Image 1 (spheres, rainbow, N blue to C red):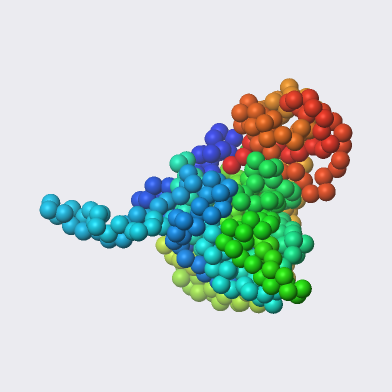
Image 2 (cartoon, rainbow, N blue to C red):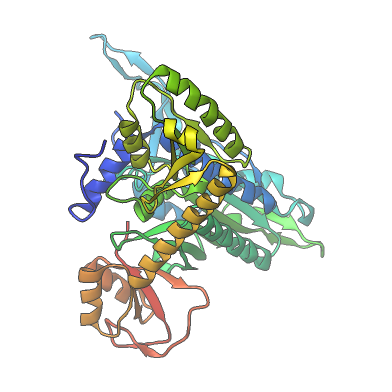
Length: 490
């Protein structure tokens, strides 16, 4: 199935693009920069959604939905916010089409909107305009709301899942009575994202804060999780923003305190997107196709019958269905593929390419001997097991695969993390090694931008609880009190 599949070492970018398309995750659409997420890809996203949504609700959040369109005037109320998104905004100016004298469909110039509408690039403005009506006193706080939605950011250079003009995401928007509560919320949601990345995606992440230059537009502090892909580039896997009172002041959202005083509300926002799909593919997959962690695999186990005639298939199917039922009793998703339109070898290749964690094969000899062949996708190892108690063996194997994928990714990150002390060492690490480069920085945006211009490397994060260590900035030579994490990124 993957004979003409590009190898990672030959062209990593092409390998990724081909894999996403050939594994039926997504494809480009007729709309420039937008993608079609195919059923197999969407099934993975649904598992991500389900896991995250459960964690959001366990931490006290509720889902809501806000409009896709935002009045342009809303964006002018928070200056840094509009500046951050202005170049990416899609704008609706008219509300009707008509047929011209030549029979062509054209915009009806008489149907111009009084105020242009922005297709949401993010929802802070429309949500805080709404919160003004919801909040009067401390009794109305906190508001802990999340929405699952689509957003539009008019990207010029797009790549499936990683950067598209329209993408799916969730965005949490919370309102609090105190700064301390808002900061606690911001850090809590960062922890939720990190837990999801490591325990479901099997991707190790660094938790930290962004520099002032890399902060979300309109935020006082942006917390992030950063992951390392197999090509040595970093990927921002999630962000949680402490917004202070900026949006409350912009939209005049005040509340009456217990002391009977009027104060502005404190805010947070946080989100992850279908970019996580790209991270999942790039963190684990190989030259044989997708490799999926069991917790997010749409099909966790596939059973393939091996037979020569209909009589054999009928006998095998009785046993295979019983095995399928036993495994499913453990809450594991199982597919029994008894299609007679494809041979077993073709099926093996298909499920290997699509990253199904475990493949079980059963033939006439297995019926006689009470055995079954089990193949792991992560290690490509095969073994023969007794059918007795197979559901428990499968459960343990899936746990082993999940753990192994995380450990493999963690080992790769550890081996791809470098400490440097000079500009020459820094350039060599960025250009020739890739990965996370830990280096001293003088704390100025000027130096940060000069390093980026010279090497295309950015400060990915300043890790939380970062060790304090006196040193000199690798670029300016000025004093520094800690190392920060540099990398090229997606």
